[in-house]
Image 1 (cartoon, one colour):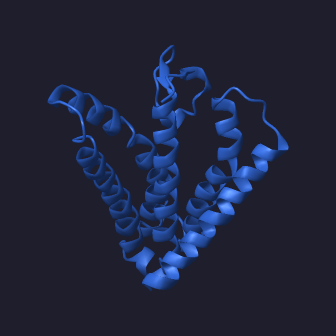
Image 2: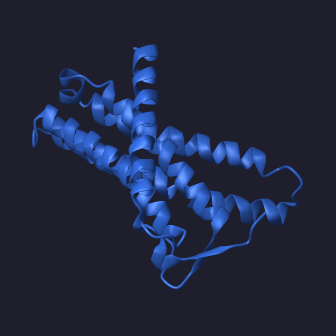
Length: 183
């Protein structure tokens, strides 16, 4: 396992490392993974909402519940995994690190949740709210390739942009499958 450290100034805001801190690359990887699966699950929850469900507040509930249950599932899964080969102090330390790794999941759900609330309260029409929320998440996925290149200190290249496009396309397939199979 590598002990490479990443300076905080190269990290996206949603990783919430304090300025001047160095974050182990394993933590960066875990936070990126949490952000990607949190974003995909929130997109799927968003994609399954109708105009009526958003107007009734069910869109906000679906996005909020998806975000919250993804956070809980993340914590439970890592709490179980941390039991393997660690004493109580090591488990507590690693569980604290995993708890910090939920921030990207919360970040993924925040804008869509707020947009669904605003649509429910009549501030935005449902279509606009859904487009802004879905567009925001898609943009985040599209830019993730460039962002990870920045984190690793590499230069932003066309391939990094295409990696983001590929990630967004694969995510769209997962969202479509989830929406189709569950509804």
